[in-house]
Every structure is written in structure tokens, then in C-alpha cells.
Image 1 (cartoon, rainbow, N blue to C red):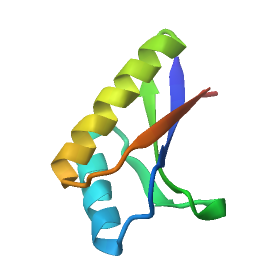
Image 2: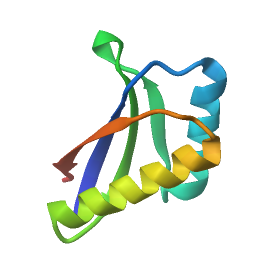
Image 3: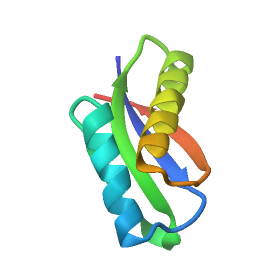
Image 4: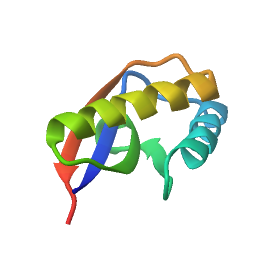
Amino acid sequence: MNWSVYADLSRPLTAAERRSVFEALDEVVLDSGCVGPQNGGVEEVYFRVDAVSAAEARVTAARLMDVLLAKSDVQVRYELQLQPGY
């Protein structure tokens, strides 16, 4: 099953940080995704994962977020929200 992952970040990113996170996302996640500010001033990373369950999707999404934040050298916390894809 395909899952949409929305990772709300704990703070706004600078333009350089946003670019760095996107470059890491493009490298790490198949079919990439997007990074940017959302309504209410929340910065968000969006991508999709394939997993058989919500629990597996959450674990995969958290692992990918940790990798792309490490690659981009951006220090930020995140909160994941998942929705089943169609």
C-alpha cells in the first residue's frame, strides 16, 4: 500500500536549509517529494512510502526523515502524519 507522509517540522527553515533538505529528499526517497512552508507557518516535508501497514509506514518514514535530515545537516524535530494513498 502507498502512504502519503507529511512531516511537520518544529521550526521554519532558511532558504539554504530548505534547498539542502530537498536535495537530500531527492537523493533518498524514490519519486522524491517536496519541502516548504504550509498554512499556519508550519514547514513541511512531503513524500510517499510503500508499506503493508500504518505501523510499517511510520517506521519507514521516520527512518527516511532521520537519514535526509542527517544528510542535509539540518537540526530540527518533526512530527509525522500519514494518510493511505489512493
